Length: 170
Image 1: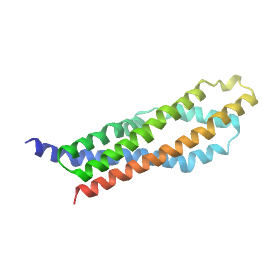
Image 2: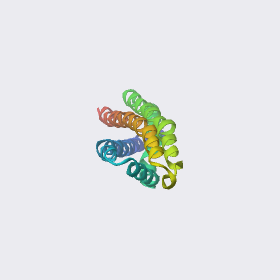
Image 3: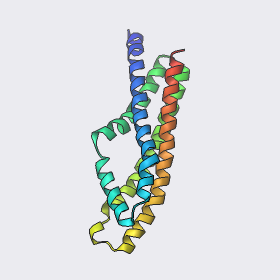
Image 4: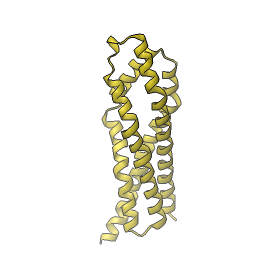
């Protein structure tokens, strides 16, 4: 009975993992392709103001569903694949999970979020032009590099999750 329940649940959980990781990879990729480039054209004050606003708005259920959901569903899929003896699928999903946990969650939590918090504490209304330029310089290059890295990790994790679906069907 346990085998049949797992075999019924596993494909749906796997589809959920692909969907959630794909949504996040798409968000990061879209941000990488457009928002970063658009923000780079702004004046220092407009850049800081826009980024502070974006950082406030990204904290929403849509983002957390894909960001947090992938953290949970990818390892869950790995466990289901292991339990049902799907070795190749297990290794693909385990790798997708590790890439996600380290490359997306880790970089975000230990890199991007502290920089976002630094920018959130910056009082734009009382800052001089020199201090606005300094905070942008301290923030922008490092944040963009970290974002590029987590974007690549999200895409790799998504790709591995897709491949796991294909190998699971052989």
